[in-house]
Amino acid sequence: MPESRDNDLDSIIVAKRLTKTFYGKTAVDRVSFSVKKGEILGFLGPNGAGKTTTMKMLTCFYPPTSGTATVNGFDILKDSESVRASLGFMPENVPLYADLKVSEFLYFVAKAKGMAAIDIKPAVASALERCNLLDVSEQLISTISRGYRQRVGLAQAIINNPPILILDEPSVGLDPAQIKDFRDLILSLAKNSTVILSTHILPEVSLMCDRVCIIDKGAIVAMDTPSNLSDRLERTKALKLEVLAQTSEAVMTELKKLTDVISIENLGGQRLAGYDLPLLSYKIEYPRENISVRHSITALIAEKKWEIYGLYEDKLSLEDVFLHLVNKEKEVDLTKNEASESAAEAPAEEAGAAEKVDLSKEAEAGEADKQDLSADSESDDKDQEKV
Amino acid sequence: MGAVFYREMKAYFSSLLAWSLMAAFLAVFGFFLCLGISEYANLSQNAMQGGFPCNVNVYFVPSIIYILSFLLMFFVPLMTMRTFAEDKNSGMLELLFTYPLSDWNIVLGKFFGVMPIILILLALSTSGILFVGKYCTIEWGVVFSGYLGLILFSCAIAATGIFAASITSSQLTAASLNYAIVIGLWLLFYLDQNGAAYASHIGKLSFISHMDFFAKGVICSQDVIYFAAGAVFFIYLAVCCLESRKWRN
Image (cartoon, rainbow over all chains, first blue to last red; front, side):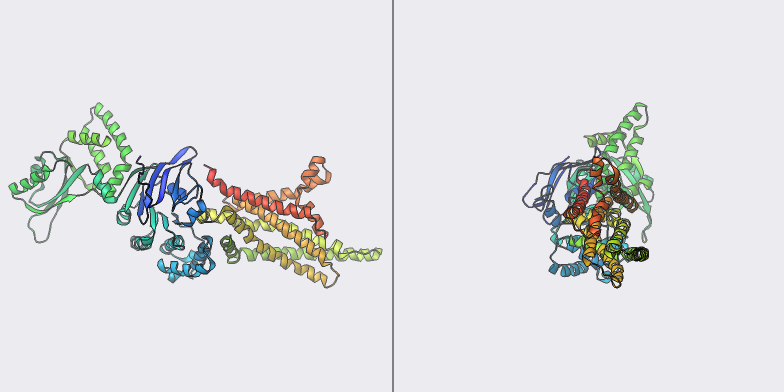
């Protein structure tokens, strides 16, 4: 598990080996990280990974079983009240008092957060305005929509302008249009704060966060910027080739002749207006170090005089990275199965293909017409992964 | 604490809860008041025939104080049972724990949030005594002592109610547990009556034996301390209960 080494002075949150066990089961296992002032850190992980437990420890809901953290310079164990005064927390299911009006609820929160009586009225007005709640300020919370409830949840977190915001699955349960609005709202409010947000919506992380912390089974499996994460974990490179040709078979036969290629995937064809020939797309995957593959492909195109429509580099999405990291364990199991299968003289290709589906995008799983060029290179590749 | 108190007051008075409890309490009290008055009327008539005086401050006022304490025993748990259950079920309690509020603040806010309704009920109940006072000479010192006892008594019951509510997320369980505690403490009185020496000591913990002097117009420091200490003890237990989230697995 990677341990944070950058406990710099400018880190506003520093977690040191936070561990939480419930009835002997470890929910969070020696999690260490630090968050710099003004940064937006995304906790990404499947359900039950330990995101909420980590957040609850940081918000002093319960103390860690071992380890500690400092939030805004205060220790969560020794100075819990100061920690809580310097953060705004929005829990996952946004609990609110349904029998209060929106403005009354915010008044209650401002009072509970210890704001001086004179500051409460302007703080409520400002929170209502910043979260676009002015229309519903005099409505009972029980009568407002989910989108507005979510905003009230955010308003209660920011009402005292805390330097740190901790948001647990902030956009869960919203429709796509609301999610976009809400995301923009968080980004606008986050300008003056440090934000930790948890989510299992992958695009949210790459759109909003400066850094991502991928958590699985209570431990941090990776932590970096979204782009670095995909770069670092890219073991293979892929090219997307689009040519205008009569038949797919002819192109495929020629492509198969290329050496050092891991796999070629036929992405299907389509007719484009204004072109006589259909547009055929292929995804060619090759080992990262074999740059010569690119030359071979361009040479092949020139030699065969194919009418090229496009040739792009296909980058691994964060989704691929996430699935890759989270499925690592499954993968090991799969490899074990594969070993036993090959002992029983089962075809190695099948196991390889199964793994491929596991690691690739879900959408591709159904339509992929994957051609494994060599079973050997595939299993080599897996060995690398295991290492 | 002010915030939680504000929230509790809003919760009682913006819903039907406070109003319906007050209406029910006053209706039942009115019924018992009528019974009390007619009983006293009979008693004083017989007394007059027998030629001995029947003092309203000895025969009527204490019985009203006992009736009120008995009613409070049944109504206060209905008021306190929701204090933590709603917050626990909605998840609001978790959010409160992340605010810079201590557990004492939360519990005391809830406790003082219940007290105004009880005080309003007691204030309204004085109308019955004021009515009788129009026709008899009531010694207001006895009434004051009785009501002081009732306030202290309700503080103790409210504290047991807050404690019962803090350990469960079900309103029904909270009320049942509270009834068990309150009725249990009430019945300890019988140990005091006809038990062994040690039983008599335990019997001293009974609510009723400490209401006795108050109802008769005597303010005894040990009774004041008993109710105040009881309230503090159960509030402390409620705080411990909330704090248990920190050490419980």
